[in-house]
Length: 372
Image 1 (cartoon, rainbow, N blue to C red):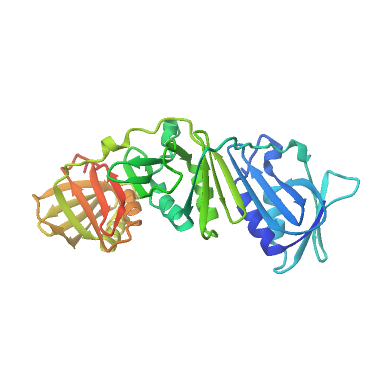
Image 2: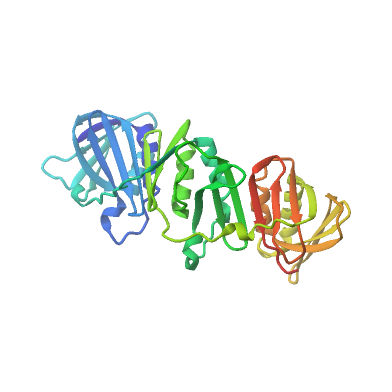
């Protein structure tokens, strides 16, 4: 194998694929990236056995072939090479265990592992296929992923639940919850998504996909079965196993009879929560909201540090009440509100609260209160 490739293009592709490689591996070959050169194209593959990323880019292929090299080390080598240089990679003749990587007078020789040892992750049959705009897929991730649970015992909550919903209208719906809060986002059901199984996309896959989408334009081709999902765009192919579990009946925790309506300026409220929670040792301490006619008082009490309060104007005409929320959770939700105002639909100080973006009917949040 012998190739010439522009340093910037190679660095970008290596940046995409090496991020899936774990820093510590009990299986040595999983620390490597598979490099394949043929027909004027360079293909890079990395996997952790749950996720596989394959990226192709144009290359001057002098000699067809394949090799594996340490993913993070190769990325660092290319990253430190001068901008605009041509990088040459070549298997050293008579020594299939070493890869020479050079640019001008710079030369590295890397130990390789046999390409035959690199695992082939088969996607299998993916009968359900549809397309989403890159911007829609980014929104779907951003509006929900902060609510993904990190508690490994409830593994079925460690991802985004993606499914076709048919209530008032046919929608593609994404839901994430950790038991304390729930985020829901929906889009018009794309052609081909009807009848798809409900799938749980793992947290790591969501993070890798979101990183890849930073450079994406146009449409994303999505294919899935009940065990795997694949995303194809811009020469990148990401295939992932899905979480094997049943997502809970989330509809049961979405309140429908909350009759107290509180309207607040979203940015003003977010900044106020951030300010008063400064007194907390961490952002998980409850912020108490005292609701009166057209006014909200935010307060935090920390026995070790002191207290903080702030008054805000609001649109509220129901009975006075006190309710507490996790400050971090409030900031996560208000950080996703794009409209000028945020709407809280409340029942009482012990029941789930519904939070809505007044200018985006596709989003919905549920937040459990805290004792204060």
